[in-house]
Image (cartoon, rainbow, N blue to C red; front, side, top):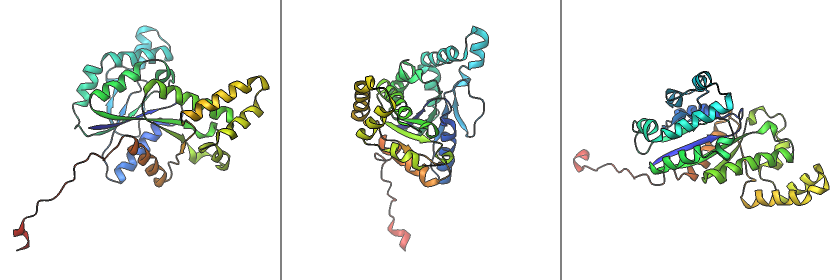
Length: 267
């Protein structure tokens, strides 16, 4: 059985930085992971790239040859990847053992996870390859300054959850850049009543029923829980990784290795 993280989130939320820090942490604790680039527009990496979608297709080539813009070109690249799951991806995966741990660094175009079926089919392909997969959804903590932005982030994550049908670990990234962390504490695991009260204060009375429905939706889907991630602290990275490992049951089915005992060794 293999294990995989699908690292998604809006553009600029720190996905590649997370992948790089996670890789460095695993090197430090002597744990093996492989980071895969699935962004055809990526240029520079701070981690060794185990697989690179740009070997299959790149955004620059698509924009130049087909005359598409950045957004349309990225969707085209991902659809091309979807068409080559049985060829390119399987060939790449065959280079690794069945119990490998892969981290997929994904593009930041949110519609790829919310209503375009590319990543849903990508996930199903991984499952057929006997991978346990978890979504790691990153949200920039610097934008979580009020309840309206918090709800917007929750709904975006919820949309991806419904589309991909996978366990989700929601992370507030860039906590090392937040000057006043107390402003975020009430949004890490907030009470629905607090959210509704704050939302009603910031919006017109005619939206009261909508606000109540939104809060109930977020609460019922257990989407009001975010894990803060400070990449300066090893314990923070370790805690996040532990939560993800628990979601994908990493290590739970590992065989217990017992050294053969030879009585002659004691003679």
